[in-house]
Image (cartoon, rainbow, N blue to C red):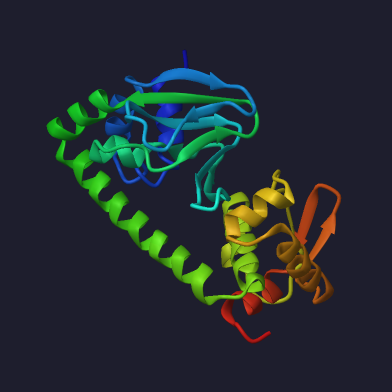
Length: 239
């Protein structure tokens, strides 16, 4: 069993529970239980009843939907320290996407019953949930805009920057000439294509363009990122 204080530290890094005081996070952590999933396992399907949300301790989970043409569209990945399955748990509706483990996953689960009880007894938790849902709506709007309006190179540049800042938060504040920042994505090119809303061949062409421009350099399992050049791509549709 993971100590509540340790779980609370993980919860502090999430968008949903991060704004809460440590004591409130610990009361939530006390209600969480360990679960595990094998690589390739379907955790839940779109349309399922929502009984619990999950906090990933180790591994990677794909959140995706199937288009009317049968094409799988990846909405997001939940990795170490990420929460998934929270939307339907918060509103009591059906699951809005499939969740599939794309590696072996260890996680902690929190039932809807436990979360709702905490929200009803603690206004701070309810307010954190409302703020989270508002942020998620804004992020969804931005993602739809990006897919509809921006070239693949721009989407990829923004994805790489977001991934760098997630793995190395101090990189966001750096300025002036600097060495490329190493990034380990841990996903296939097919997964990357689904995340940016494009086909794999088009993503491969865009990656080649970014590499030719010096914005990235693929080095085995790592991608070396020139943050200044990626920022230039991310800010312009005309490069």
